Image (cartoon, rainbow, N blue to C red):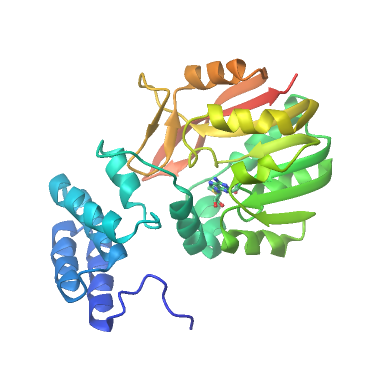
Length: 300
Ligand SMILES: C[S@@+](CC[C@H](N)C(=O)[O-])C[C@H]1O[C@@H](n2cnc3c(N)ncnc32)[C@H](O)[C@@H]1O
């Protein structure tokens, strides 16, 4: 078996960490925090351990304890792989910074369970709904399509029969490995979508299914996509939405949510023509539907 990349390096601390997770899964959050604290006495520099302690405190309703633990985790994890700085920002402590290291770690861990967990258990249906929205706008048949944040290829499967060439890009090597197994992409590139787009042009269709909830404000994405599209090219994406006054917020789930009116105004301001926008439930989270928006734009 490969070594656990999140191990503390001390088998006893690891066992206590695992026991804390088991307690948390039984909703015994305060007890989980206590056991995690014992583990951290053994390995005080365990960044992911401090992150987990923060989660147990958060679930137990002790925000003060959670913030102290995430501060320690953030100090020990300057790259931000475990998301402590994002958690702090979501609670109004400091700024989020870039989420790329966190996203890569999250999806590298999640890749082999992604489809069963998301599609089978959480009712994820963005790829088919987004493909249907693009088809209804008459833009699904295209020359070259690029699937931003392609993940395991669920969006790619929907568009492959309709496009001449399909390229995928993702931050997570493990997600790309799953996508590669499907054999549907002409190329798969491991990159941040902003870096990838800087080197591109001549694209007819750009897709981002359940991806822009990890990238934050919409304007930089729109500014990066528009120049790579051919005239009349199409950009279709999903957003998680919220009804508050802010253009976007970082939720404690560490996903961004956008106010629909602000998102559509940003699309117009970036020079896109709106072909369609539709409110849609994206998946379930703790039994509740997650509200979202499907947007189809034309470069004009
Ligand atoms: C929830 S998954 C969705 C995957 C796929 N689009 C689908 O619908 O099944 C989000 C994917 O976006 C990728 N991602 C998030 N931010 C990214 C970025 N800045 N650049 C490239 N990929 C990113 C993640 O690695 C992950 O694979």
